[in-house]
Length: 340
Image (cartoon, rainbow, N blue to C red; front, side):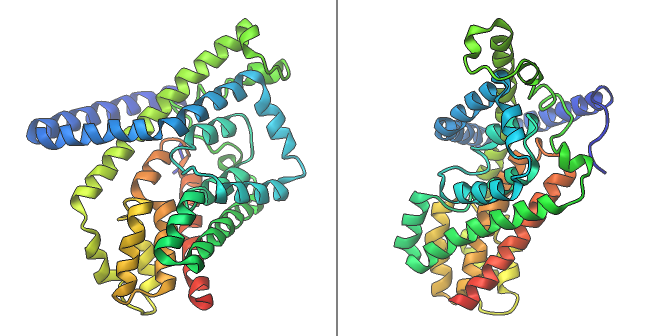
């Protein structure tokens, strides 16, 4: 059931969930104080590491809303949806951002009325590779694998964007953001949109107030989304032994590629750390197709990445994101197996 409950009705439920979560965290801290300190340190470190990418996204998102640029961007997609999906996929395949660090910009554009299809294309393509990842992949797994991974990122963006574009116009495709207090206050750019485009938001008191409100709201959204995501990543690092994956995806069999997606992706820890792990698995018999499926799906469908997106997207768009990511990863693995 999608989250269409009015905000006034859903707020008591959300507050109860927050209270339960805080009680659970307090109990864990009491039982495992050392683990809680380590997790907190990892979360703080993770937030600092992604800050250079996240902070500009927050600032741009707030400016887009306050200046009225969101309305112009949304109108620019009229009649050009397929071209913008192509561009979003290409840009996503080469930019050094992931689904987590691009969260504020994507949420801000959606709240300003930008269609879901190009956002979905960028969101799917961007985590898979970037120039630094391309070079590292080439050095670790070879040029063929690095090129194949970049092509897979671009293809995944096109696949996801075009599938989203041809879906019937339901409320969850035209308004994919959740209706909760974290998201509802975003895109107050109705002010900017109603008064046209004005880039110098600091010269207008109303726009400056909107910019500040958007900045605070987006910062709160990002912190609430990323904190549990980084905590989940730390717990996965502690609980999962990467070598254990060899028992599942280390064999060249018909089920190797599906298992690489459905078992490997949730256990995916880090893009760079996954490269030597994948090379070791391939040395022990993992097929090239399964290796490609593992790396592509792990980049897009990792647990901590999905946790950061879930509070922002409504249930059906979120499930569509997961379905497109899984299907695209399977296709990437099978196609690369044929080529390799």
